[in-house]
Image (cartoon, rainbow, N blue to C red; front, top):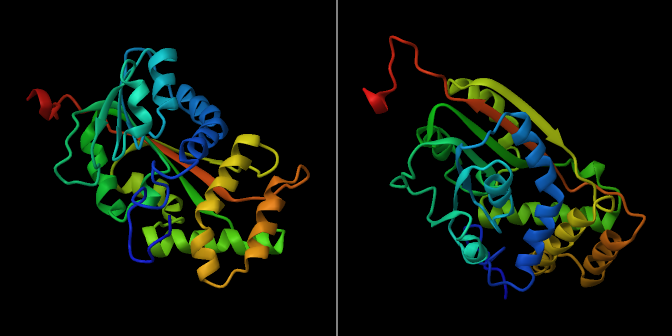
Length: 274
């Protein structure tokens, strides 16, 4: 399957559920990132009985954990629910495009999205709309990648592959890998309270799941990279570098930000009950 250089949406061609190895790529990412997400959500007080919306739920691993461990009622929404079919007994699976202005899933105690807003062109409009999906006192938790400066990528062919990959993401999908740097200020501008930010730097070679995810991700970039000047031998050397046991490389940072919708004051009742 080749990559059309015209504008796409994430999952149309690149990272489509129909591509070979996509379930495994997402599974490797979940193994690497779910422990971080779980610790953050527990620390933020996501408690039993909460009603949660997991946006861009992927393979449903985090939603299932919320359902089992926290006893939450979880709605898992994605444009493509192919990898959520086995979760219907534990999750309320909803196939929908969250960027559609008509998407109104209800109101939740928690709205969570990981690696979603950075990859949708409607991110500026979507962020404030997500507040309408929260109850008063509800918690918004967003995690997105932030690009690493190329000077911090050590191996020359790996550096070329990674920088080319993120160029592809920007040009083909419209990704913004600096958007998460603005979350704290954006949350404050939207009136959220209790705002916090957490940064996590996964390392290729140190985490097997993340290493497998990076290899699978770069493989999906092969057509773009080779048609934009990278030699096949250099690309294969970049993959070999990822697989070497002694490799320790960066790929992206993860920025998580959270904030709560203020509770209404006694003089300002919840409009849902007014």
